[in-house]
Length: 596
Image (cartoon, rainbow, N blue to C red; front, side, top):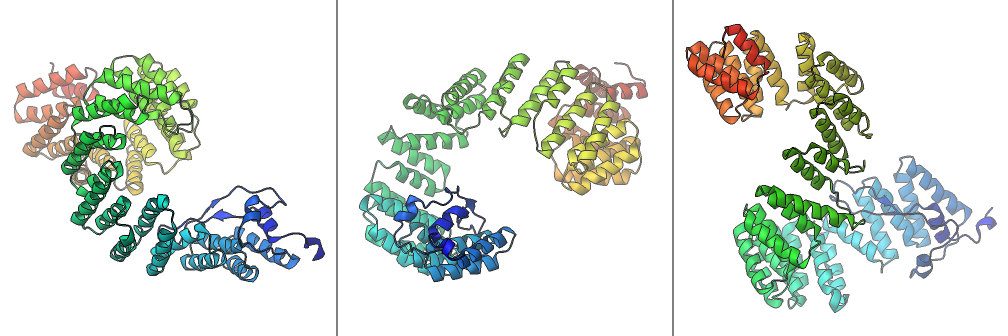
């Protein structure tokens, strides 16, 4: 049996098993590393050119015993074990002196979230492959995150010293990024200051010192270092952006960027940052001017076009926004490799068309969101169905819902919820109730389905079922203020358990103190409890926030009971103008025997 494997090398085994993974440095070494991403397998039975050229890679014959151990370790690891396979790989690496086995041991420890074992394997990997930049990078990443950070200093110093002059700036930035992950920020910064001392004639050295100083709260020092970088290289956009960042104040950052642009008008990155800063400060017209300057030099800059569309919307320039978003989409169409999702732009264009009454145009834009992989696919399809329903074609709208393709349970539940809403709004309450009843068989713990189901149950006079469903929503989503408000209002409307109703609405109001409909519920329960003054106060505040017809009806009834019948009738007439078919208004007027 042994002779059968005489010509098989360890390199061949590593290729044929296709078991290599790229280690991923953990975000928190103490918590353990994360699982790694697989690398594409190589052709079976063949050694790669990289293997053949790898320096110091031992030629190890793969005996049947070694093959058995490695294969067994891989099978055990795939079954969920890690300790035995890890030890096997470590022992094999020490015996064969092959760094790939140490690397594989580190992968196993990483996947098992065992930080100390991963570090031990990476140490061995570096020992066996001292020239491996990958092994060094992972070693540095681990020690910086632990209490062994001092081990990184001589390695950083050597890497900086050996880096070619043209690449030393990049090496400085890489070092600063690794050190920025240290839990001991002060020690990391002191190490950084020592390491950059030989390179203070480089603007990159002062930039990394600026970032390091900022990480320990030394803002003045950070500003000083950024200024030194800018003095060494006055036209450096990176130095200007760093100085703006470390200033800490938007106004001061804006001055830095504006001053730099006066001297360097072609600085694309700085102008883009300045424009975004102006947007954040609500200086929309100056921001638009900066984005327009960007477009002069880069007419097809999709980021600039999108930003101009958003700014135009905020300036209520709908026509301009439409033009920019259309150009944005046209540029994306010419760049099939661009990873940007056009969904948001298409939704905005649809909303613009809808606002001017062009329902067909709004639907046409939504039809372009035809990729089910798009993050907004389901939202666009639901919106499309809603527009069709608004046009009065219930059957077509429901059919549009059935055509939505999604494997996501939450999205599937949302489709059923919208279907029920279509039926409810069309007056088919029993059919809507049945849709939700069946939906809850599939998604019994969906709070949205349960909430709408409860409201329909109340309309069908299934009050016990309504209350049970709302209490289930409260259990599943304790921060859902609507469930507390709905149950409290239902009790108040029926004039029962008023103290409990008040407590439920008060809890909802604590969660959402500015919600006018919850304010309305509070006013209504206070009215039912006989506190007309408190009721009027609550309802007037609610109506000031939102002049909703139902709030007007409730406020009107409070005023009617207080004797201010003229004011009550005025409110009811306002409600009637806004919603002539409002059922609450009709029932109130009939109950009080009032004609307007």
